[in-house]
Image (cartoon, rainbow, N blue to C red):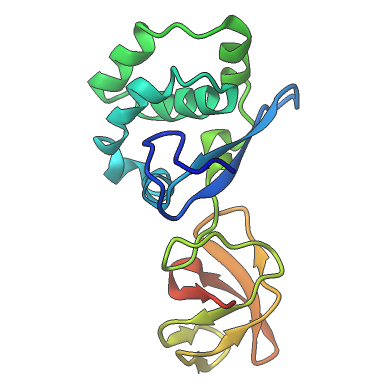
Length: 179
């Protein structure tokens, strides 16, 4: 992991995200700060934030170029992003990798994070930060409830865990990673 975000050069709440191609011909990591990660998780609300990609796409790191390209493609409807893409020059091989996105596209770069932006992984233990009514199970999971051995889902917004013997889907934003 780098000591600063490869997109914006900030050094707080750093985490690595994995970037790969659909064919498996490229695999690498990009170190991003919590602010960039949160913006990637809610791209529609963060389109202006990513004007910084104009510089990041030229960072001499292939994984950063691929991630930047994929984010710009997702923001193409914004005039500024389309202009960057039209005037862009990166190595043909890197461009081919950027276009060879896994089936879920740039969303594969999303990481499941808790309420404080801390990345979550399968097997982690989390604590609920608010009471949650569990629909269909007839109980309310109380704030402070510990959920051990969570599983990540295909959607970065949700995790699975057991509470009161029932496996349920929980919103990651209502969790805090336990140390």
